[in-house]
Image 1 (spheres, rainbow, N blue to C red):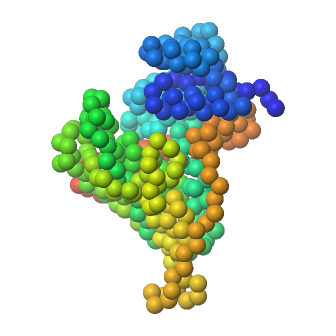
Image 2 (cartoon, rainbow, N blue to C red):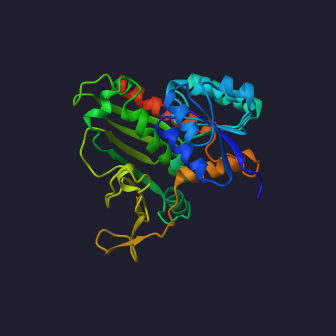
Image 3 (cartoon, helix red, strand yellow):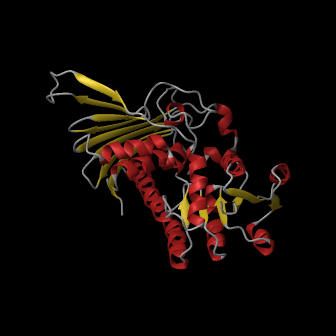
Length: 345
């Protein structure tokens, strides 16, 4: 086997720590360094037998990683990503790729011009549940797709909002949580062409929304409704249904529903509903649970990143894909603010 790929992680927060542990667990990867100015990050680097640097400039001055994972706060993604691209280092940027379309476009175009691989951490696309759903849709078993619905309903406790920035604009569930669901729907159903939306902060009265609903029209003609709230006690969210992250309690519910002329599919349970003979509301409807072998998508993402760096695979979730998902989320926010139908460019 080739030598492990030497990776550095920028940012040792919640998601950064997850990347660090997955790198340590993968024999194809080697944790070269943790880049984060905090004393906690320095202690973590010592614990993980990795080098510690307060900034990427300090790292680049002494070491050259083969790849970098940017897991810093959202507002730093573009600046950190540009540093990595300028150094010619393949980069995986956590979602969202940026806070706005203009800076995200600049980062993507800079990476493309430099021919440096840029990936975005929409890790759910790597989940075997989503890939199995994609295969089923593309097989034609659902017929012509007509509609979809996505739920993100759960309750974030009061102590979650003790961190100040979580109460400010840009830190609500649309940017932090719904972006994952939008990306999953884009992967399954194709590009979005327009959005309508409403949002409300009536529950907590923070500067950021706690509830939003959106209607998306896809290029294929599919219509999708999305409902998101972090103020509802409910079992319908990817976090509580997918078994992806063991820190969340598991429910036996689904959070996505995809409907076509020949059948419907629930996700993540992958229940395929259809009439066995004639399609009719008078006929018995049959449920088949599609088999799938589960794997940790964050681990699969690290392995794929290593293969991209070795030029064994092409990026699965490119910077441009991350940009296109961000455009949909920005359109949802604009539609909610203006009350108008917003076209997604």
